[in-house]
Amino acid sequence: MATVEGLPPDSLTLLRKHIASSTSPIPSKSQDATSPADTDVPLAEAAYLIFNTQTAEDGAEHIAIPFSQPTRFVSEAQQKAIDLRSVYFGWLHKDTGVGEYINAVTTLNEDLKAAGKEETVTNLVFTEKFDLISWLQGDVAEEGSEYIRSLDDNKQVRKEANDAADAARGGEDVEMRDAGLTDAAARKREEERLREIYAAERKMGDRNTLLRGVRVQDFSGVRKYTPLFLGKSRAAQQQPQPAPALSNNPALRPPVKAAQPGRRLEPIILLSPSASSLLTMSNIKSFLVDGVYTPPESGSASNILHISRNIPSISSHSLRFILVDSPDNFRPDYWSRVVAVFTTGQTWQFKNYKWQNPAELFANALGVYVGWRGEVVPDTVKGWGRGVLTVQIDKGSQRWRDREVVEDVWSAIEGRMKAIGWGRGGR
Image 1 (tube, rainbow, N blue to C red):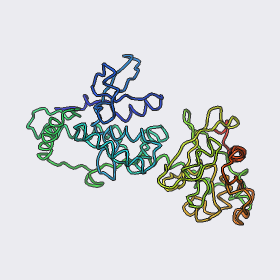
Image 2 (image 1 turned 60 degrees about the vertical axis):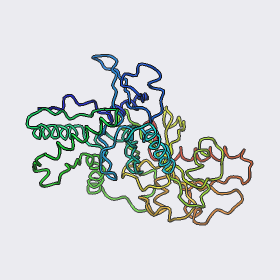
Image 3 (image 1 turned 90 degrees about the horizontal axis):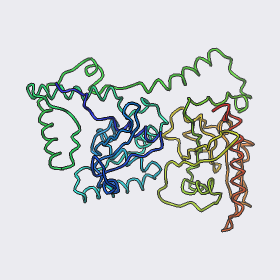
Image 4 (image 1 turned 180 degrees about the vertical axis):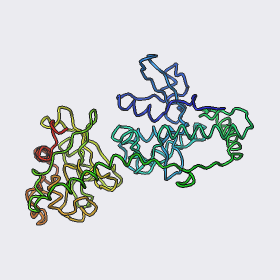
């Protein structure tokens, strides 16, 4: 009987561990990669992804996994398991905008065809790509992704496929494995042979398939949200509700919970999606990082950006901030990490927010209004009071005062973060 003992190591787990250790796997034309010519190749010509790891028993370990091997990441849009090349390519373009990413996928597929490979790179939709990147860089627990099958489930599926193949062959051993064939014709023959084997399968059912369908659902990810909702509900039953006049006072709210050991939460800054906003995803990085205002650019821009800032009063290490202009892909726990909201004074911006009332929103996060120097601040912004920082920048090409404005913004963000519990004692 064929077993799963000889299955290759899990590529997703290896890639996640390498990213956590700040080391990069190496694309290679050959499995051994004995010369620089094997590794100094474009991604379209590479056939393997090589992981060099250290183990306590054997010391250095060299693992080569074919790029065509399917992973545990299952795309709902494509209805299939995504191959390693598509996963690795998505990670390489983690900070790329949607339009630029789609163009890069098209270009790589053309290069693969020119290199004589029949495989293609899958274009991951935004939600799937965001979930994959979050899981790979450790922002999501091992079993916390809805698109990634658990290791135990993956092994069971492979074992059942092996047993079915054995029965179809009348007892002859058929080893179900990732062939890793570089020859397109040989790989196609292998796929045709497996298709004939599967056609002779006898479908068996158990209580999971009869009661829940053919795909066993993994609800382990729900556990991480249970304390969030049950904890709030029990606290509301056991403790009296605060007076309405005090509910928006940030000083009375509990501090942000400490992160799990070894994990640092990343604060989030929300931008306004308004076309009249002076700061958008195209120019916010140069403003907050370089201290220079540049006019917004039209066209495609990244949906998510990362910037780093040293704030010694909060963390001894550099803090990485996440910048987005829409909360559409937020999980419930993301709202506790929002520290600042850039606004133009238009209340429709808050339509999909957790806190749609401006008074409540700016009690939980700092509001920032950026306008032109000399122009009148909108009455709506003035009416929101001290929860919104108002700054103005110069028109024209003279940008020497931008740095002073940016430092005022960062000082206000730092003050609000400390007020709501961010800091060395709360992180």
